[in-house]
Image 1 (cartoon, rainbow, N blue to C red):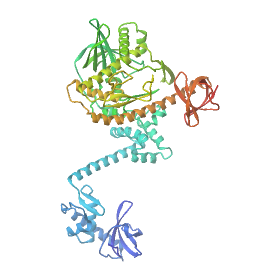
Image 2: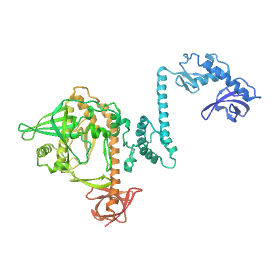
Image 3: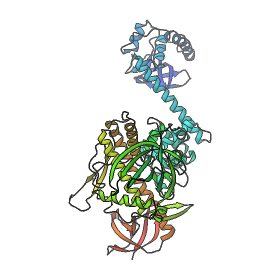
Image 4: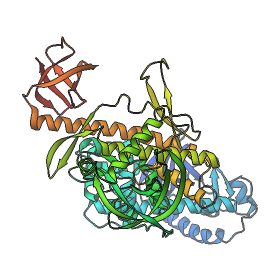
Length: 619
């Protein structure tokens, strides 16, 4: 309908419904006097409603007030009408005709009633329709989420202003802040942070708030803080209780072997004489029996995928309360475990393999160094013989190209240390071989019983006749021959408090041992693999970047202007990629000269933190 002089019209101004009276018309533009006393010129397209009647122009305010009074009365009337006929979309004028509403005030009231009840009515392309019961329920659920979201954002604003925040809102903040950095999610939260700290970048604002709410600590390195991986656990996550678990008590006492600063012990060993041979037990914390697979802890573990061990921090798969205490195989405690018992004859050949759910006592938490010093004594000496036998029995390429020493950084009491691991240590050989036999036996047992698992397979590249062909590991629900291990199938199951693949596989094994249906189907595991592999790739990238940061810190602390042995590994963006010998760690260097020999002396004289490179001379 074309507007005319002295008509009542309605339009939206700053999302507010406004009534006005046309006091002048010309060339498809209309001068409107609004109920607030403002005047303005509008195109006809701006009007959402146009009255048919004419109203007095000698006192515009009085005309609008009179219309408003009539409108209020009509709104009350139309709210009591029966709209059950409105199953199909109808134009407003047709609905008014069906309801026998002819006055302008009644038409306007009908429009407001339909628009003000989106929970009942659908509005699309100038037509209205009564929503179905399912649509109404969906709207109510969405509306509830919207109101909860606004309440949460309001709490965030108050928290930024120095007020308290609820545990539920803080838990959500712990989740969403890293996701802003990683995936650019939660634009509404981003806007709040930009408004609060317009003087700094969004990334800096996120980091500042993560520090304020305790999700990261002030000493976390920038590689981890800026990566968008979750670090801390909210109080709500830590409050979730573990499930009770009380299987029968085993007859053995076991001990752990791990690094001297380890706190999350997830596997233990027992060894007892058995006839002329031995009964070897490999025991893994039964984490899956204690963590509800549909709960918040499980969801958090799925999101994290793996623990990350950094120079001055451990970013665990599970809260430390569980990973380092209740689920950790701590000396002096009884713990629920999934055990593999191997019966060995006098020649140390395996004659029987038995998996069992049980509770065992943990006697000691040994370090690799302690075991290496006592390697000639029982039980370590027979364990070493058994491990060597297991290694020789495998048709394996595992360890063929392993370097003798591995170097890493550790910050202790604020002091940065370079540590060296002997990969050929007897204690490490024992643990490595026993975990291999546990995982390969686990895989064989699962295949024998047709239980879906996440296997770790190997793809080889290039010439298969090469002594050490290039290869890449990948996860799959279909187990294949693993050339590195020399097993018909292989999986990870020995570290369920450190890796989510192990946790998922353990859920399956526990169900199998209880003669119950598997928790997860193969398609469910396939779906999980995609997100797990993506997260593991991110963690590897973060780990490498973190190591690079601490390498530069260590060089700045100990090796500026000190000659170091190095070799060239390539070039990147006009810089040399140099490996420091024997650490096996690389730096990007700006040098005035190019190395003329395979190995050379490198003197670093400056660390450039803007791009994490060094300036150096090649001698």
